[in-house]
Structures are given as structure tokens and as C-alpha cells.
Amino acid sequence: MSANPDHPRRSPATVVIVGAGPRATGLIERIAANAPELHGDGAPFELHLVDPHPPGGGRIWRPDQSPLLWMNSMAEDVTMFTDASVEREGPICPGPSLSEWAGRLREEGPSHALPPELAAEAAALTGRSFATRRLQSAYLGWVYERSVAALPPGTTVHEHRDRAVRVTGPYDGRQQVWLEGRTAPLTADAVVLALGHLDAEPDAEQRALTAFAAEHGLVHLPPEFTADSDLNALRPGEPVLVRGLGLAFVDLMVLLTEGRGGRYERGPDGELVYRPSGREPVLYAGSRRGVPYHAKIGYSLSGERPPVPRFFGPAQVEELLSRPGRPDFRRDIWPLIAKELGFAHYHRLFTAHPERTAGPWSAFEEKYAACPPGSPELAALVAAAVPDPADRLDLDALDRPLTGLRFDDHEALQQALRGHIEADLARRHDPAHSPDLAVFLALLSVYGQLIRFGDIGGWWHGFFSFLASGPPGPRLEQLLALSRAGVVRFLGAETAVAADPLRGVFRASSASVPGHVVEARALVEARLPEPTVDRSRDTLLRSLHRDGAAATPAGLLAVSPADARILDRGGRPHPRRFALGPHTDARASGAFARPGTNAPAFRQNDATARALLRCLRDLSCRASLTA
Image (cartoon, rainbow, N blue to C red):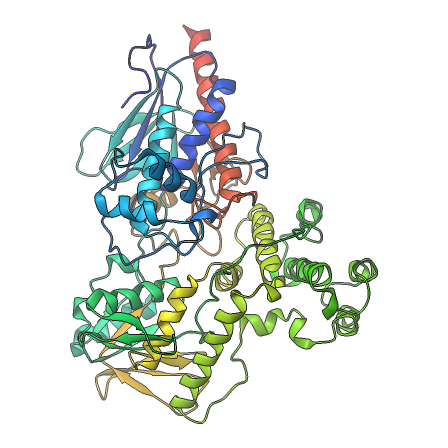
């Protein structure tokens, strides 16, 4: 593939990008955008993309997935393109969101190249629809093709449907990228890892559970991408223990119910009813929190947006980073985040719902700013200014809603959990609770600041996902129907699973119903593997670490926050190796983003693209001087 194969060629500089999913696609878009400034001499260069899956969607967003699997963001909230909110050196290159792209397809009519079923979905898509992952794959493929077409004349793009297994080469010399099953490597002036979510070797607990299952003829499915799991071993009517109530659980729920022929219909009172096919197992699901992720908010913000960042912005980050020693998340960072989230919440409450507050916003804002984070003075101020406790932001209660609650029996827990989900659905679709949306926007702002700290541990990412990256509301409505039908049974908070060698089964219990135990011959870990370097099944990533690339205490690949260059164990950035994505300590919340949110991934892509182009320019200049 070539942007202009007729352009006069000199010996081209070469970049190898390992991974061809949305993160690589976003990087190529930024390379094309920045090339006129930083590659203006017209010297040709080559891009090699290495990925066994199609470019654009990559593995996670590949087109050959069940049409039952959805995105968890509304179509109007998905874009791959920069806008004025993105802090970057390169140019803004606007492009359509997923819903706008689908709208263009509708205007073009049936001449576009989508399969009929995807064309029909695109035609019916609205901004507030939740598209299937297959349609998102088509959008990402279109963005990829557009980005390649925008590359400088003479640029050649080679697609390799292979796996890269190792990178070798001198510190400041050309690199060799070795592909599985090939004897000759790709030679590159620079290499970028855009690997996305990776499989991992099991930890000690998972290995023990798998061994127990093999010994006793049980089923144990370890953490993995749910669409890749072999669910055939989960037999109809039998109990299955499930650890995890996040997005991986939702996928599992869908594939084991509708995916096995069940269907939903509306009852006479409008309530959703599940009609089983008889092929479903019974899912006993629990987690540390014991409740599913919060539903996506189902309305738009009207009026003034929360003026964030205010208490956790660049100035506060600079001050924390200037201190001797590494900032502690709980001690130094979290109090500022909590105050930032509270500021967004109360700004919205006072400005949009003043009848539920006591006094003007200006007076409250001044006092709020003066109170130390997490202080008794701050709590007293809020109590006096916000009469109804339900209007106050309680982050601890949000994070652990079942803490301290005990139920007399398993059925009482089911009723309580259904009530919790019903209340969450109602609240997330009611603009009277618009401070929730303000907090969501503040969470996005906070995430954008946190990437400067590198590895901050896993708690924050889980908290963010629980509040801000939950399933579409219709999925939780389906979960309620499955619960009423007895296909899903909730286990409760602090779910614990153990192997019982005497009975040859798995046993699950929780703090929510003391003494209640569920036995099953199948256990599913409904979550993605942790993105650690040492346990990754990706041969290339492990070999990089073995050859000297640094990892954080949590096992993430260490990269420079400025431009994503891979760091060695002495903290030295590699001049020719870069890495982007969830396996790095600069992981962002996603490769695509909501428009107008200064998305961290877009900022990182721009900085890395510019660093790459400067690298190629410097090499070209060096070659000219030595010619």
C-alpha cells in the first residue's frame, strides 16, 4: 500500500509499528498530521505494521465477533480525531465521530463497502445508540485507510499479518524486528509497540485453580478477553461461579444467554422479561464490590460545564512531582482528586439545582477552596450548604455500596441487588442528578493529569472504570431480567472462591450473606489479565524486559512521559524504541475517546508521532552529512 508510489524515491527511513489496532491507527493519523511540519523535505519513509489481525480494529475490535457484543459508549461519544480541547503541538485534524461517520454512510447510500448487516446497523444508528463492536471495527478500519492516505507522498505502508517476537539492535543503531516463523527480520530506524490488551500467564492462584480443575474434572476459565473464551464447556442448567461484575462479565452474560438462543420481551407492565432457551447455565456472580459497574449516563449536560481542572491540574501535578521522592497515591494524590471531584459535583448542584442548596455558589466556592482536602472543615461546610445528604458526594459509599450490609439469606441479597441496580438505572437517566455527569467529566480530567505520574497502582483504574466506564443502561436492564428469571444469582461483596478437595468442587462465599456457600463445578474469572511484563504471553514484551527494558513495581513497561520512549533500568530513554498502550506506565483510558475531553491517548499519540518524525529527520540529515 502506498500513498503515492510514483514519487521519486531515495533510500527510505523505516518505522515498524507492532500492533495495528486503534492505538496504532491513532499514531498513524498523528504521523500524517505532523509530517508537513517535521518531514517537509519530502524524503520517503516506510511504515511496517505487524499484527495477525486486520489493521484498524486489531484483535479486540476485529470484525469477526458476535453481533450481540456492543460498545459501552454511545456512538456520539466515540471519536479517533483531535479537536481544540486536545493539548498538543501538532495540528488539529478534525474528523467524524462514530455516529457522524454512520450518518455520512446513510447519505452516500448503498454504494459503500459495508456488509449488508453492518450497513443496516449504520443506517439505524443515532448519536445515542450503542453500536456493535463489528460496526466500530468498520469505523476504525475507515480511519486507518484515511490516515494512510494522508501520509506524505512516497510513503509506503506494508502490512504483515504476523507476530513480532523480538526486537534487537544497538542502542543508537538500526533495529531488527523478528517475526514468528521468518528467518530474516524487518530492519527499522525506529520501532513502536502498540500492543493493546495482551494475554498473560496465570499467577500462582490461577495456576492452582487450573490444576485443581484438571485433577477433579472441573472447568476453570482464567482471566482473558471474553470473546476469545471457549464457553462450550459451561453446560446448560449447571451452576457456574463468576468472579467479576464489570464489562467482561456483561460480555459473558450476553454470550451465555442471548448467545444460546434466549430472548427478551416486554411484559404487560413494560418490564423486560427474559425467555430462556434452556441452554443457559446458572451464573453465580460476585466481586469485591458485589455490584455491577454503574450504567452509562443516558443524558447530555446542559448549561455550564464544570470548570475543571481546579484542584488537580497541571500546577498541582508539577508541585507533587517537584517534591523529593515519589508521591504516594493515597497520601498525596487522592485527597486532591477527591476535592476536584467534589468541586465538579457541587458546582453543578449549585448552578443547575440551586433550590437544593443553602446560599450562593460564590460563597460556597470561596470557602470550599480554603478547606484542606478531606478535612472536618470541608465536611462541615458541605453539610451546612447541602441540606439533603443524598445530594452530597460520598466517594467511599460510591466505591463500596455494600460495605457493612449483611443479609439474612441469599434471596434477600437478590432483592437488594435488584433494588440497587434499578435505582442506579433511574438515577443515571435522570437529569435531576446531573452532578453525576459533572463528576464523570471531572474523572476524565483527572485521568488526563494522572498519566504524568506513571504507575500509580491498580486501584484508581478500577475506581474509574466502576464509575465512568460501565455498561449501557439496556445491559443492566437485561441483567435485572436475568436475575428475575433465576439465570443470574448475585453472590455479594468480598466474594471469595476456594477449591474444596474433599467434595471436588469450587466453593464461593461472600461477606454479604455470612455462612451462605455456593458449590459449582465451573469457575469463570470474568476480567482481563493484568498487563504485567513478567507474566505477559507476548514474547516480544518479555524479551524486551529480559534484555534490559525497565518495569515498574506493578509490572508495567516504563516509558518516558514526554514521548513514550522505552526506558532502560537506569532510566535512560531508548532513542529508537517507543511504546504506547495499557502495558505501559503511561496507559490512558482508551485508544479512542469522547470528543472535547482533551483525551490523554491523543496527546500521547501526537507527542510520540512528533518524536518519531524528528528521529527520522535527524537520521536523514545525518545521512546527508556523511554522504
